[in-house]
Each structure stands twice: as C-alpha cells, then as structure tokens.
Amino acid sequence: MKLADIRELIGAEVLVGEDKLSTVEIEMACGSDLISDVLAFCHDKTLLCTGLVSAQVVRTAEIAGLSTIIFVRGKRPDESVIEMGKAAGIPMLATDLPMFETCGLLYGAGVGGICLGADGSRRGDVG
Image (tube, rainbow, N blue to C red; front, top):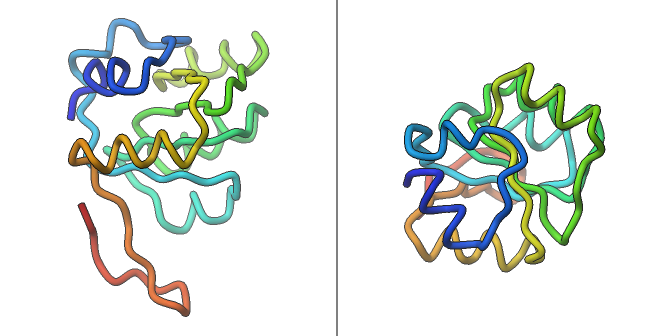
C-alpha cells in the first residue's frame, strides 16, 4: 500500500517526507511503544505506529530499516526529532487516532502484521 493511501486512510498530517508519499510502499505495520519489540520483529517496508516521540524512535527506525513512522494519539515530536527524521530520510506522519484504531484501519486495508507465538517466536505474516 502506498504511503499516500495510508495518509488518507488515517487522516494523518505529514511531518517529514511529503515527496515520498507516492513512492514508499508499505507491506507491514507494527504498533509498539517498546523499542526492543521493534528491533526484534520489524524490517524494511514496515511502518511503525507509536506514541513515543523521542530521538530513540528515529534511531530505532534507522537500525531496523523501517520505512515510515506514524505518531499516534495526537503526539507530535519536537523539532529536533523531526530534523533527525529528515536527515535519515524516514517519512514521519502524525494522527490523532489511537494506536489500536490506526492499526485496525491499516489491517482492514490489507497491510499485514506479524503473528507471534506465545513464546514470542515468529509464526509468519498475517494480513
């Protein structure tokens, strides 16, 4: 799914990456406020839905190779974090929707997620 379609679907404001809306393709989404989970289970063509607005979110996205960060619950990072996103070339969007609803809308539109077993092991993609 193109990032432009996602922006429209969740009514998001583009903070960084307006020029990438029609080129970035998203296959999976991860909704988490736990950096360790993001590092363990996310990869390229994945967007992160999070309420965290610190610099660590951008650093984590760089390390994990994430395609996009969406800030949920009306959260907006400060200008220094936005500048980090620009420098890293990572599109960043913001929505007033809660994480649950944002992820539900994405899933309903065909964006997959990761299915984990009770022990935390990856069992395959869903969606």
